Length: 217
Image (tube, rainbow, N blue to C red; front, side, top):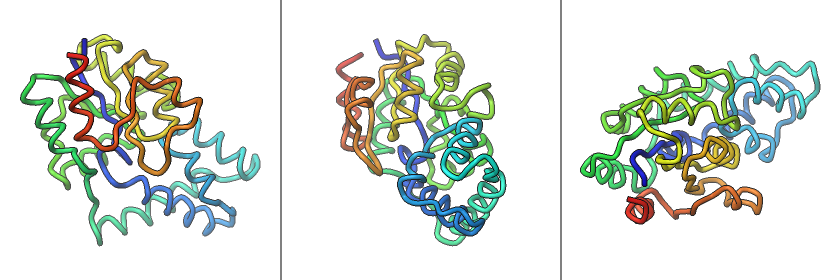
């Protein structure tokens, strides 16, 4: 049944979601917006149009998403250049297994392609992927299904034959609505009751996903 696996990147392959949350908060506060942890968690994996809407919901119609985002990028780039970035537990084991078993792989991320490539190369994961799909390549980012539909298409597969791996509710909604077999590997929080209804399963870490793939081969 499963012929491909599509990966979210931040918080799933890379231990970077905590950095996004930290620097969304710092960036927003530097611009005068009282962002809290709950606000930043709600921003995870959102495509730009949805992120703009969310910022305005939080801080009013005049809230400047682009100024906050530019500051967040500045702060996060400076941090990563100084301290690097880490991959998530089990990433190598899972990707090696998929490669050995000729299962196609793609990344579906809100991050621009070149930046995603840079981050994945830093942790020696880029070579495992057949395709890198960014939200910038589709009309609507997560939680809309567009990015997963394009990722499956790029692998020449139907979404129902692809397992999607996500760590956030917005990403789970995107993958599930595209028709993928959706698995959550929790990072900063666990799935709520609504999210659970969209999942095939959950996994403690990426290595544990191997058993789920074996169930569906």
